[in-house]
Length: 86
Ligand code: SF4
Image (cartoon, rainbow, N blue to C red; front, side, top):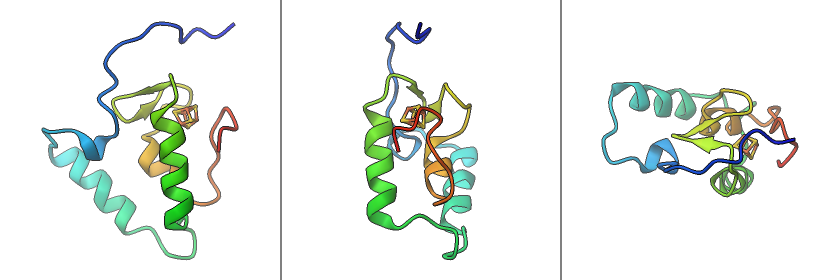
């Protein structure tokens, strides 16, 4: 049984939040500085994030299944969605 059956404001992805603080800027810098050798291709990255934004487990940019910020998790091509959605 899925324990994530309640709904609340998800605030979309961290990059879409209005009040970005230094923490989230650092998160984006981490993503930007991932080596091209391990970085997910842009099309695949956007596809992954699209699935996350439709997922009930996304909350404030974080996956409630694994605890990762999805933008960072999706940015490495070897990473997988814990629910195999990407
Ligand atoms: S990583 Fe998977 S389970 Fe987590 S928010 Fe994205 S699609 Fe949902």
